[in-house]
Image 1 (cartoon, one colour):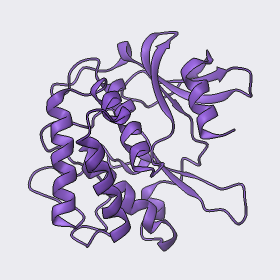
Image 2 (tube, one colour):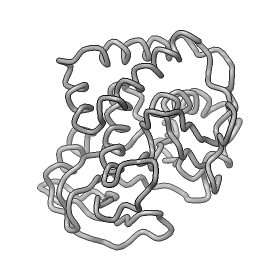
Image 3 (cartoon, rainbow, N blue to C red):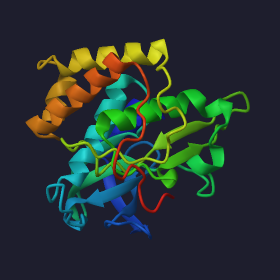
Length: 246
């Protein structure tokens, strides 16, 4: 099944509840999305199940999950699994393709391995762009390739507390801090910057439905800063690691 097929199924397929996922801060459900093709497993986060936060507007976390997918998709980095927002059994919320993975494998178990270097560099820049306040090690999933010649893929999940207009970057991935950003990734950032300044671009229109104007302006500024400085971010003052780290 292609990514486009999965995305369409997430948007319009029938949702069947499979169960509540444990250990989540907010109500999170495993669901099956059914249509004409084979069912797809997905993670459903209803808006009404979001835990109130003092620094993020109530009911906005599902929109931020979707906005993270939009930015990943605009960069063509495929870091965030296909994600939509729609009505479900417990009301409006985000629905994201479930990634089959080994929960024992996460960032701390793969840190420093050269095979994942380029994927992790993209994730670091992505987190800096979206101002990710919660990149735990366990929010990096490893999907093993079925093809012996294929490459295992890293996915980032749980982007509900991102895109704040104020600096809030908290992550466990600092291994590239202050190093030069590769030229190909800078080129991708420049293309994103151009799209962010193009109001008629469908990406911009979708983003405006998920974030407010101050948050979008801050996203543009973070993209411009990364391009201007040309280096991976380094920890600043204050708290820059999430808790718990896994």
